[in-house]
Structures are given as structure tokens and as C-alpha cells.
Image: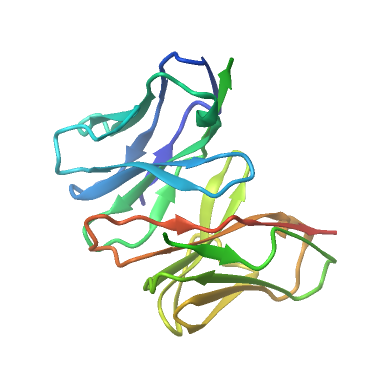
Length: 115
Length: 115
């Protein structure tokens, strides 16, 4: 069974600084997708960024980028120029293959942004 | 914009009561999901539905059942609520797993307290 591990229960970052959230996963599949979701306090969870395992290029969405290391089964999220609105719980998630429908989530990392 | 709504934000029920949590999505998605979110455990899948009247057990189905009579609506039922079912319940929907832009869209959550 696939597992997703987020080893940092909480992280803090100063406004305008850069922070990296860690995620590792375990799978025997070669085709899969990885995701980072953001859950702001009392607000709905939204997708931040998606990475297809077959793509070597790391995904980027504005201030959010990933460092995808397939051999190491590592998928970290880098947030540049952190803003107060980035404060949230962040979840790493895995989806198997092209036809997999289900996501496997990590335990989450609470990100606090200090002004 | 995809919209996933849940019938209640907060719910307080007594032990032994039958509890219904309703979820509605407006984007004609095939897939709908019920998760339970607990601190330190992330999101755990309770049940998944890939079509009307079709369902599949997730990782923690014990004590829960589901109903999907219409494509847009997915209900979670606690037949006899217990205190260990106190939790945040999240509903999500998505297109099929083969969608190259696969994404699960989440509702705002229902915080259920069983006393």
C-alpha cells in the first residue's frame, strides 16, 4: 500500500522569506501523481500544485514550486516570498497511475507566517 | 467554479443517534468522496463513489455507510453515532482518474461532535 509521510508537524517562516515543506512517499508504481493541498483556517481545502511522476521538470505555480526527486521518493514544496495568507495546513497527497481515483494523504504540516 | 457544499458546518449529536451528512457538487463529477480529518492523522478515506448507486469502501468504513441516489449528492450515514466519531468530515468530488488535470474539490467540512 502507498504511504505518504510529512515529518514536520509545524513550520514557521518570516514574511517575505522562503520555506520548504517536506514530503516523502512509498510506492512500487512507476506512474503516479503527487499533489500539495492547502487548507486555510476555517476555509476549504484547495489544490496548490500538481506533479506528474513521468515529468522530470519540477512543477511551478507562481511563488510555489516543488522539488521532485523520484528516486528518493521525495516531493517537497517551496514557498517563496511568504505572505500572511500562506498560513495554513498543507497536505501532501499521492494518486496512483492514470486510472487511480483515490488520494492518499500525509498527516499535514501547519505553516505559521510571522509578520 | 466547482462548488462542493456540505449541509452543516457544525453538528452536535448524542451517542446512539443516527446522523446524516449531506454533500452536493455542481460540476457533474463522477467521483465523490467522504474523508475524516483528525489531528496528526491527516485525511482518511471513509467511502468513495464512482457512479450513482456505486460505492467502494475506503480505509476506515467501520461504523459508516453511504448513499448516492443522484449524481450530484453523496450522503454519509452514521447508523449509531459514538464518541470516537467526533471529528471533521470532508466531502470531495472529482472527474475520473484518467483526467490529466485530475483534482479533488473539497467542501467546507462538517465538524461533528458526539456527546
